[in-house]
Length: 253
Image 1 (tube, rainbow, N blue to C red):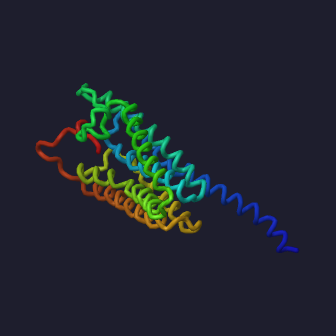
Image 2: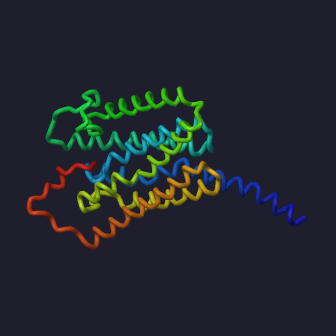
Image 3: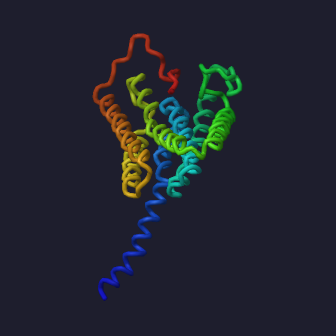
């Protein structure tokens, strides 16, 4: 009798925990960008944030959505990708507006120029949208043609999560080049680390495709490397070079 009573209580409790975990998966990934977004709006300076982070996440989540058409996985992971794409577009919009407002060079650079030297460093948010739509169209068409190939679908899934695992690499490289983490939100990186740890555990416990778990672990290691940079540069700051470029003109990747 007592066991039946506990079972009646545990079933809805387990369902509640599942809903909370699913909600955390869908919206938890965007939370780290809230403090960075607020910092950029407050300071009107986006130099400390690498917009290539947005590029990595847009590519990764577009590929993950296409992977879903070939091999269905849990719905929270699909919705997470949709929410993340919208969030990265908002981040790009803010960073572009702030950067253009602060630039002395008024020459307009656009996606239609097809200039590799200015790739992902355009003067209008609309150019970024055009690039994302062009990539989605090409990748979607190739996926449509190859959807019946198991090898293609599995490779697509691996590329999606591997690209996402490289999320922190642009920020890691930017910090290394500048020998500083100034302008980078430490809260954002701490949330990256905690979120990626939770996400990897979610993958392992819910039997997600193997690619997800492997690349989740790699993502956690990159997060820890960025935290290591923050600690090292804070305790051992580099002496400025005699003819160093002024920080305001040193653009993030």
